[in-house]
Image (tube, rainbow, N blue to C red):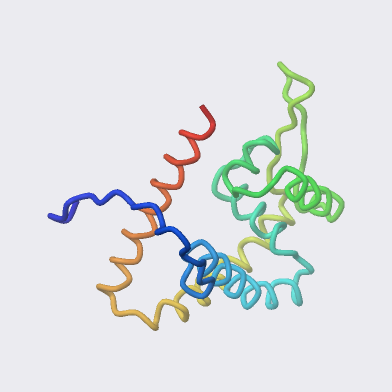
Length: 165
């Protein structure tokens, strides 16, 4: 990979303390929450959408006709958060739920026309926020960040799979 030798993480030395402001999982979480709150303030004010509702809508816009379990998997949100978000979106008629003809226990979700209209207005706002955030990085840094995030996601999935076995 990029001509560098893969390195295996070494265990923390005995007595090492966790420095939260340098701990990557914490920093990624704080960054995600901060960015999400900045973007969310705009779509929450204008459309009454919560962060989980927007994530569900974005996933359904990309992959129509998913089950709630598939939405939870794609968003990495817990099932309760997805269920609450979906209930609000169904109540507001932004998401339609039908039942699978082969398995009545499985619901099929898709954006309604109203939901698609909201998505069409929120998506450009989200892209503008992303562009503003990324403007702190050069184009090369943006490519490196994308590569690093992909590699970290692949590693996290690998770690998760090995623990699920």
